Structure formats: structure tokens, C-alpha cells
Image 1 (cartoon, rainbow, N blue to C red):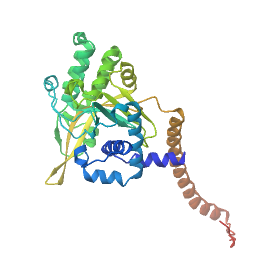
Image 2 (cartoon, rainbow, N blue to C red):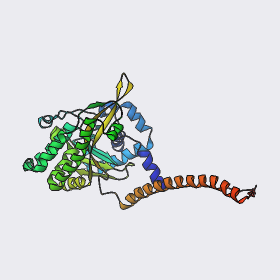
Image 3 (cartoon, rainbow, N blue to C red):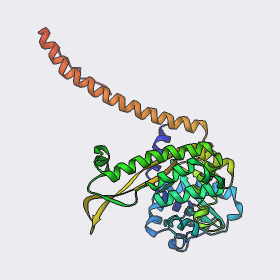
Length: 358
């Protein structure tokens, strides 16, 4: 368990783009091919050097790449590239709801296969008002168009309208939320709570809607178009060390249902510090987002690995408890022993053994 914990904590420090680069580099390593210029594969030279000098990242990339090649041997001589930094055109459908974010769902492209990469805790989406509305409408379109006639549909669309777009706050947002003195913040906070309630009800009322919502969040089919390389066809889910990798097709409704049932809906604020010429002003930009988070993207993890993660969590809690308790105990004895000896009129007899073997 100790080595697993250390590996887990080390790998968790890697960013998403680090893993994407490591997988592409690993793919060329295991297929015994040379990358002529890193930029041609969507990898900055500085990132390439970082991965080269991080053995754990290289190893994870090679293990994940090995799984890709095992499942899709026809990709052996195909080009692999990091695709996450590319920009793509949005569909008219998406733009009609104000969507403007062109970040692809595809993180890695190998031949004709488009992979969305998720390591550990996965966020399927974190979209603002327009992106959330477009995702919502895409799910309605592909599940049951008659949903537009339901009272729940109308309630949810009204709630989404209450989301706030990019707005400036004079300070950090938490004090404003706590004080309840800002009307815009108050209205948005209410919209967030109502969104989780009303959209949650719609998920419960229509399984097909819930599945299509998850599918669009994973694939981007309505956002970019089904045949667009920016749309992801495959979900690549791996542990941080690359030791366990599962690849699933987003067109598999059974898989999408499993993800839909596992995803946690959040409506919340997102903030960023405002800067002028690189100097923080103390002001903050804020806007509403809908997030879909999945604690375990796949149930394929072996029970032993799950137990290890639970044990690590318990161990950390125990360590914290013992540390706090020991601090209280030592403070008690420091004060209490002096008070007790003073009360009893006792003089402590301290003897030191000089020959101690450690």
C-alpha cells in the first residue's frame, strides 16, 4: 500500500496535458518510431522535455499507449497527436444558443480514432450559461423532442436563463455570497440551487434525456458535428500510473447510462482574478457554470485498487486525528503535570539512562 500511495500522490501532480503528451510520446516509443518535430504532434518542446525527464510520466504514457495498441492494432503505423489545443468550428445549432467555446472534446487523435482522456476524477463539462443551455437542448433534441411540452422543461429553461454571464465583483465572491448584500450574486445563487433541483428532476423523469446529456458532454457531437475530429468517439479512462486503462465507445448507450448514473451535477460560480498589465486589482470576474463530475469513470477498477484508495483516505484521516489528538495530549500534560505537582507539593524525580540503543 505504501508504494501505491506514493505513486498516486506523485502522479496526481501531473496536469491533463502532461498525460496527453506522455501517451502520444509513449505510442511512438512502443511502435519504435521517431517524432521528427514535437510541434507536429501538438506537443510543445518544453512539455516534451518535461515528460522525458519524468520517468513516472513516461512509464504511464507507455502503459496507456500499449492498451490503445492492444485494442486497436490497426493504428500501429498511424499518426498520433495531442489534439486538445486545436480549435474547431461550431455547428449552427450550437451557435444558435450562444455557444462560443471551441475547445475540442478530443484530447488525442490517432489515425481515425478520437480519444477523450480522463485520469482519475473526471469533469465531463464545466460550461457557462450558453454552453450549458446548448448541451441541455442537444439532450432534448436527441432523446425526446416532446420534452419541450413538459412543465419540467419550461422550469429548467427558465432557471438556466437566471445564470449570470461574465460579471465583475469588487472583491472575492465568498464574502459577497455569505453577506447576501449583492442582488446579482443572490439571484445567481438561487438559480444555481434551482438548476440542480430542476435539472435533477428532469434526469429522474427521462432516462434517455440523462443518457443524451452525458453523451453530448463526453462527445461534442452536436457541438462540432459527428464527423468532426474535435468530437470524441472514445473515452480513454486510466489510473494515474497507467496501470489500469479502459477504453469505451461513447455510442454505447449502456456505457453512457452508467456514466449518467454516476455523474454528479453541480451549478456554481467560477471566478478569475482581474489583472491590469499583469497586476492584480483585487477585483474578480465571475460567471455561472454547470459542471458534471464523475468520481469513477469506470467500474473496471479492481476491488483491491478501490480498497487501497479507501485505505489511503482512512489512513490520511487517522493521521490527521492522531496528530491533532497528540498535540492536545502533550499540551495537557505540559500544563497539567505542572499544576498537579504543584498541588501535591511533589518534586519530580528524573533519572536519565545514559546508554540508550536506538
